[in-house]
Length: 228
Length: 101
Image (cartoon, rainbow over all chains, first blue to last red; front, side, top):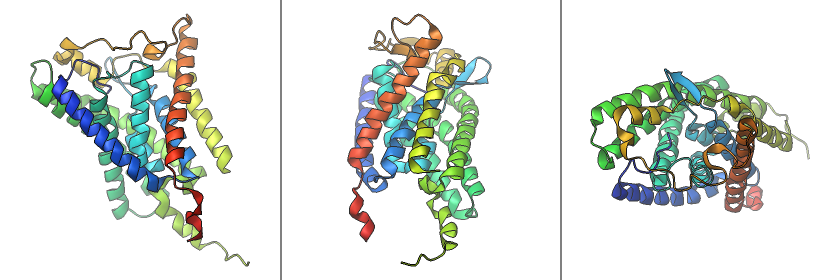
């Protein structure tokens, strides 16, 4: 969903840039609480994994493809603030090193693909965990649901930004319908990859999954008290 | 699984995805590109200002073999993201003494 240069006019691109800088600054503060000696290396690897997975475009409909955005996945693995930073780093490297995503559109892309996916995907994940049983299967299901919704949500926000500052005169209704339609399909791919990855990490190292830390507690209760 | 082993496996999976599996990715336009082309959004699209950069478009300039070029670009990308992201997260982290609370 990388927006290239020229889709969005200069004022709205600059406005999105300001929002992106402010959001990343907030995330840098918030991430301090999520990162320690154990989780910082995992967070770096999560960003690298999101980059790698974003290279894997999968076919969705006639002649169209999609790829992981990764905000929901990163937030569940390493925390929402750190998740925002993971996707932002990926977008920055893609824009500067691989000419993917316009440089004037970097703010738009960070808003769409980092902020919206984490806010919506991780937000829904946490809401669902409140009502679902505290099991691993429920966490994987909540991850799927959060991820599936996060992608069309990013498409809606792109359409909104396009309505504000699009450089061509086209019907916003038609753009919205087309964007949401194809991104619901891409969202299913996003959800499958997210659920598979979360369940794999939960299977081997449940203690490392930020969004599922509450699930580890019942296991701790069974531990024998250690005599000192 | 021990911490170090887990992290190494996680890194290897990323390297294999970016370096090898990416070759089999769909080259069709993605959702936004397709909608942009269909609906006329892309009429004023501009070329990327770094389109001639050494790694532009997920290839390595001067490497003729497409599979090798894409694979090397993917591995380089994983490395750079790990350095930039990992470096930032390592600097941001809370230091150890929090434990003796």
